[in-house]
Amino acid sequence: MNGPQDPNPNNTRFEEMMDLSEFQLSDYLLLEGDFEGDFSAKTMANSEENSAGSSNGFAPPEASERRNSNIRCKRGKNKSGTGMRVAFRTKSELEVMDDGFKWRKYGKKSVKNSPNPRNYYKCSSRGCLVKKRVERDRDDSSYVMTTYEGVHNHESPSLVYYNYKQMGPVVDAVASGGWDPQAPPSHYSS
DNA sequence: CGCTTTTGACCTGCGC
DNA sequence: GCGCAGGTCAAAAGCG
Image 1 (cartoon, rainbow, N blue to C red):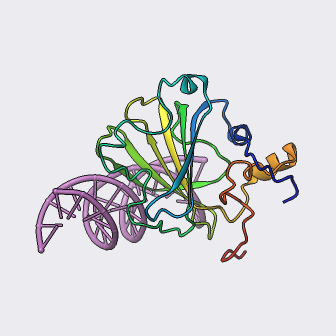
Image 2 (cartoon, rainbow, N blue to C red):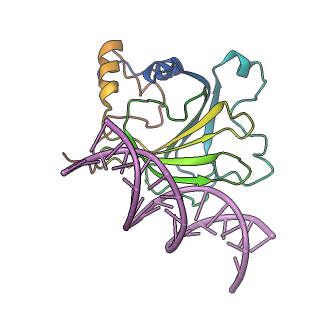
Image 3 (cartoon, chains in turn blue, purple, green):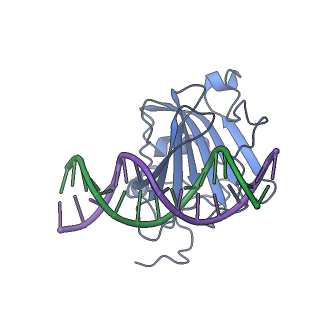
């Protein structure tokens, strides 16, 4: 870490990290800590249409009428054991955002109450257990719900570039809860 | 040739 | 205890 620790995460940094020329970051939901029982969530309405309350942020309208495993981890703990989850809602034609990391698709599942299938990705980096879920918003298919689970134990090639370019801990600015690509490599070697 | 994607089966947890 | 739904695995196929 060679940048100032921003106590007040600047969301726009993350937008810059990703190639948002084709995306419109509509919502950013940070889920941090473990998921046993309760969790803390912060939603940031970044887009003007969102702040206008048209889509009311991340919370799906059906959240209260069905068990929402999108937010709550129904198994009590996530398998990756990192206890860190970040969800985004972006307006995009593309389902997969280029966030600088390399992902390998390992599953696809159609979910109930949604006409669109959900795709499951794992980070291709060896030893990195970060997962990503991608699905289209069932109410507005022009939006893509992306959920990251876990913390990268490495930097992405493009992130190195961005760090260099912007002289700042890009990802650190995203989540103070542990979204740190330079996290101690507890089990990562080579 | 190596890596990624696809896809159906299997596993696990939760609600009833 | 049973059924459902979500999540993961793994073999086969495809692609660069």
